[in-house]
Amino acid sequence: RILSPASQWQMNSSYGNDPVIRRRLGPPTVALHPDDAAREGLAEGDQVVLANGEGRVPVTVAISDRTLPGVVLMHKGRWPSLSPGDANVNALVPGHKSDIAESTTVHGTEARLIRAEAAE
Image (cartoon, rainbow, N blue to C red; front, side):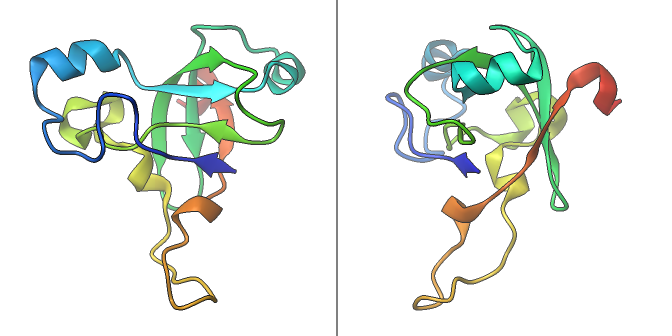
């Protein structure tokens, strides 16, 4: 499951092209719980791809105990045209509506984690 909250530098994609904000954001990362990283044989800085039936997003691994096992954290707000693979986390979100008030299913998004070299 992917959680995609705002980062400390952005509430949304406004100013996502600003060089200062882009520098502060650094490369797109996906935060994994240490147990998940160990199970997958991944280390801090490894290149992976988040993929599902909707799309693919290349990202760098960040290991953090701020996430729960089985959950990854990837901040929203990046401009696809300024991101690797011309994609951000939104590329993984299906256009389905939830069963409660026809809301978004953005926080119910699931994806596979694939080593970058295996994804090619």
